Length: 285
Image (cartoon, rainbow, N blue to C red; front, side):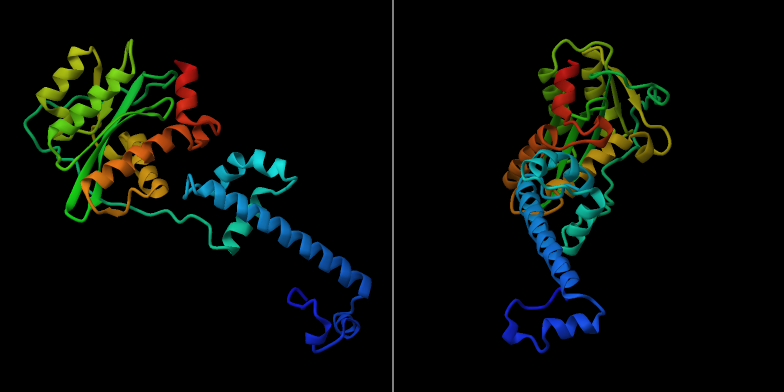
């Protein structure tokens, strides 16, 4: 019935014959058709709004779309639930499929001192209480770049980052110095990371000690003990296209800067009650 053409000459049977075959009255048929046309119109409006949002956040999932587009739906008098939105996205191949990544950027077999995990049972209740540090890789056609990140565990804001074309220590140090520079008046801050050589090195730990920042490190299952940092890595690749292969380091740096800006200012977090990291960090400062 949904495929019936509006041109009577192109129909093999009359509406009366079709209704008789389905044991329907003509009135029921036209009511159904009216509902169908209305539904298609609404779905097209929904798709237009979703496409507009995804120009900024191309891999934003359905739950966050429901929240971020609430005002847009209301403005267009669209009443749509989560299940209906999921169906519309599914029918139009717009559901986001998550990828799995496996890359080793941690070398914990070294001579430097390894610190204990001091945040294992700590409740995170404020900004700049704990920063989680990690390194992830970014592909270019000439090889890998390495993105050093520092994320505030309370607000989920990326407070410092640096992208370099090697796994040497300098990238991590630059990311740390940027984070400290942009967050004045730090008190009782703990730096949490894996046991990689970059974070255990004397240069890096001395920088932390000089700024009176406590040091915490993973002990056994580093992926689970530094889960927030791992999660942020995945978000940047899944949702902001940092999983692609860039033509050059310069292109990778531009894409990374834009991705982190959007992550901090636009991406809603379920754990933050659908607020952005910038919003939580600024209001809690």
